[in-house]
Length: 457
Ligand SMILES: Cc1cc2nc3c(=O)[nH]c(=O)nc-3n(C[C@H](O)[C@H](O)[C@H](O)COP(=O)(O)OP(=O)(O)OC[C@H]3O[C@@H](n4cnc5c(N)ncnc54)[C@H](O)[C@@H]3O)c2cc1C
Image (cartoon, rainbow, N blue to C red; front, side, top):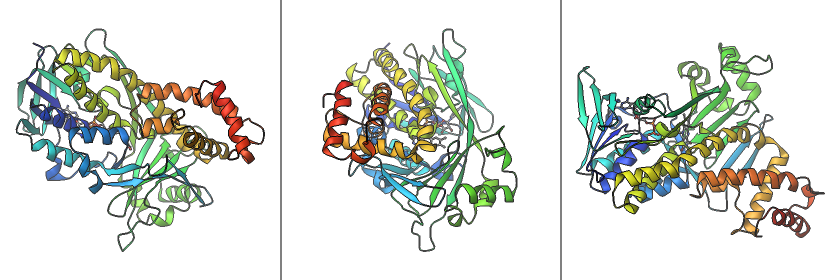
């Protein structure tokens, strides 16, 4: 049977709940299970990022599902990076063209919104506090454990694993023959901290920016919230073997934390009255990349979102990529007249290389965020990239824009990154480029390099 009617979704996080909306829109009978309590009753859990950057791919998927119109109520536009230097000075780097922005959205707010929209569908049913305990991939059935410890089996036509980086559905796939699996932990961990709102509820630093304190092997970032506060994240190695390199392991006392923050992020310290209390109260979490294949099992089980491709957060694309999975799978169902086998096979063929590509792009963006944004030559490259984009809009698009402000496949953006890195190595070696990058002679010299690299400019 290739036309399905009943679908089990394991995981009601961001991607599972959007997937439920898409399938509900197509009138499938959807049963969504999550091990957590309904967050609309309890509030979002701690320990995951409080806010996330939502960009073009995510917005496009939300619009396709009919949810886009609500985003303004939970998002703040961030038009660029605000770089904080060690002397306290700041530099603003716009992300894209005039008017382009990414949105800082509340993880809990967005998840609740998606659950509420899914809940309006008569054929979408929620089952909270039910943990996926076992899966039969061939039979598209799963055993769930209720909070009282009792088990029950649920059978469907297809089982969708949207249960995140440590997916139970994927765990069963891993036991199948010829299933590829790779997991990689970064040496760095992360800890969330807060810059509270001013007494009048306003933002104490620029609201419409993603703030970065780049310090080479580590960095601190802050994203705005609608209540005037910022959620900050410290990315730092868990351990270090070098005396001059800080690590979470070294920050084991109030004095050590304050000394580290005062020397590394001096302008942030006065904005964080609860720094020490939060530092010791909040968890230090790890960052994992997961690559696996295939993402489907016949026409009876598939993976979506982090369950298929968990990535590090440095391009702000994990959720966006998961939302794009949902949109593309919906389009494939339309293309294949709701024949799941064909849609699933094409989903696997099309999305898997893109999952791998965004994993690589995300890993490389750590170097860009933590190191290169503070390098004057990198800043010059960004300015020249933007000038090229405005001079040759149909022939040149910077890689950051391709990833963030377009839905060009991630795999093409990755190829383009390699090409642009080679081009800009040459551009930055052009004679007097620092002085003439924004003059007609500079434009001509850059254009010659672009033409020789095959750009139709
Ligand atoms: C620090 C940090 C910052 C990030 N910033 C960004 C960003 O700016 N932009 C961006 O696009 N992405 C970002 N991400 C990535 C983003 O958080 C993930 O890509 C996204 O949450 C994936 O959604 P998901 O629904 O696939 O998985 P999850 O959000 O992990 O949801 C999985 C759901 O499955 C449930 N579940 C798990 N196991 C079971 C089980 N056995 N039975 C039943 N239910 C189960 C869980 O309770 C959960 O509700 C960030 C990630 C981190 C860690």
